[in-house]
Image (cartoon, rainbow over all chains, first blue to last red; front, side):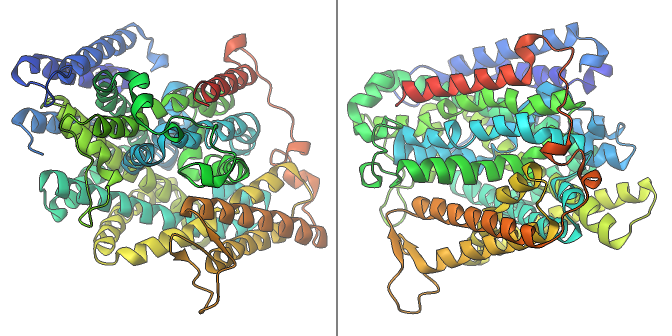
Length: 66
Length: 554
């Protein structure tokens, strides 16, 4: 329950869910402009990596650091 | 623009998180200080991100992309000239007084330093302005989502207001600040992939430079004369108007942003809040301005992208960002991008409402209506004021929908009130001879000077309302140039009048001003920090990085 007070944990959880959702949607939704990079791949990877960083920081933190 | 179920799912997940934050934080709100000041216990990294997020509302994001498309990379002056130096000044020189005086708000500092009438003038104008800004945020959100997704005006207004009401009443300022940090990351991750994909599409910065006019891709080269650049502004107007008066007036005195630093857990963190915030702030042009240039380059390249048009056939620069989202984002990232815009509108509204409830409770209710009451009572007043603030915002949104011209007028009047404010703080903090009568008269004169200046000059058909058929005293090439000159006039008038009246009236005794004025206050000692985390080192690093960015894009 203490983790829910930690903003890093909340951010990690939110962006983890959003990142994975967007990443898994990549094959199903093609870019609107022909030849363009699929933004779902770019955004999905970026958000998932950021979420992993935030969750790691939250899990390694001491209570007074939150 | 058509959303897939995935996009709606993303928006719904965000709403669940926002409401959950309010619910989780509710159990920590036990006193009025917890509700209105976050118990002055917010960690530095959160106050820093909230500090810039409070200024990263959707109108700012859409407006900066629009200006990027219209004026080019010169728009970055609003960050590299119009924000960073003021943030450094706030952290180094002004936070010791705001934080050290234990004032709970910016108007309360004015009461401690000057007198009740100066505090009340600032508190009333600020309270009205925040409710008004919150309502405008709501109105802009509803109009945008009506145009993009066909949502009804009433649905957008009531849904957003309801969610903001729930999480701010439950978790108070902490809840608003946590959501601002979420919003910051949503903006970054919602728009940065657009920049990456867009840049690849147009051939990078070289590709943009190849198709746009050189005035669009330089910040300083064409500043020699107002006629040379698309903004119509010269170097003096840019540095004095934007870089000094408007920028310092906003970043150093607007309670909405200063409040984020004031709730830090100690003096050192409060001082470092704007300094650390300056690092991501200086990079924001690459997230919010660059998409505007990419849009122009994509339109110039051809290939199916067209700039959005207004009904009269002119380019609708304000829709540049939404049109890019629709063009370059498939479902998934489209949901993230729209959620980021929605989050910005809502957190902009929450920021205004939480600043409003602090100022109303401390500076109006406690100061004038009920001086001695229990803390439970002030907590109740804070919560009730939040509800009233949201209801007034909803009413303002509907009012704006019906009387758009009156809203423009009100916005103009508030700019008159804000323009001279920094002169009052500068003199109050750094010249102990400044008196309450001097500050109050200076503020009124500065406001009046701004109004008169607007009444006798004209720019793009605006202003000149005092002329009654006579020729304008001066015609500006652009409204932005008129705004900068107006700010300079207001500031100078306030500065001079404050000095003159102060010299004619009796100052407070020195003992009553300790901790409030530079010459009577011991410098804050910086201990326990590594050398690179000390405020002066951070300030030098921030300024050096800003100079490098200016040179790179000169």
